[in-house]
Amino acid sequence: MKDSNTNKARFILSCFLILFFLFMLASNQVPFNNTLQLSPKTTTKASQLSNTTSSSENKNNLRILIGILTLPDQYLRRHLLRLVYAAQPPPPGAKIDVKFVFCNLTKEDQKILVSLEIMQYNDIIILNCKENMNKGKTLTYFSSLPELLNDTVSPPYHYVMKADDDTYIRFNTLVESLKPLPREDLYYGYVIPCGSMDPFVHYMSGMGYLVSWDIVKWIRGSDIPRKQFEGPEDKVFGEWMREGRKGKNRFNAKWFMYNFPEPPTTCTHELWPDTIAVHLLKNQEKWVRTLQYFNVTQGLKPSKLYHID
Image (cartoon, rainbow, N blue to C red; front, side):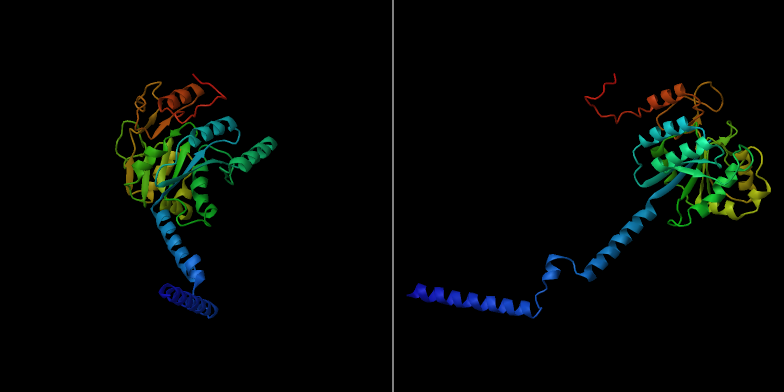
């Protein structure tokens, strides 16, 4: 009898709780939406937090543009460089974009073949100029960038590099060398002449030199580059820096940047592990020897589809 009364009491209590729960639900007092998913207000806050975090990460990440000055007809060289740079893993804490830079196309085959490249790779910048070596192509390259990139983050890149298409650049060592350096008023590269170690005396070699974004903007707006842009362009670039009192922060990357060891000159030395850039890779044999030294194919995965002994 006692057990029967206990069961009745439990039944009545259960019914009461169920009725109370249903009443609260009908009155909109039980916030199911907040327990099963984020409310709109919470979602907004979470989104703002995510955007803040992303913005903070982007601010800390190093952004580098490498512009490789080349010619429209150099299809095979661009193909090789795409393979070489795609094989390098992205450096931690940095974003590097490699673009091939040349002047207006002049032949029908260029217009078709280069268009196909752009459709496939989207890594080409065509400047509004007539192709040249020492008559202002470098000026056109740097001065065009602020307008070309004005719809991106600010600054679109912390550093902009000009490089030759016979230079092999190693991303990780480049980034590691840049991380402790200033992001303003920086002029970085291999000091010319080869025997000099003072970056304030002459200029940086065309194998690959780099400036901070504020200098790129200065080149676009200043009259100094436009008064003198003809002549050996890397030397002329150094004269702009000197006359405009730019590049107060200078970094000589010698001997982590150098010419290929053969033939030996005062600008060369043997290949070594901490290399940032190797220059004068004028033929396939030199490219192969350089890539073999740095073991660039180590990421090749084994497969039954091929055997490479």
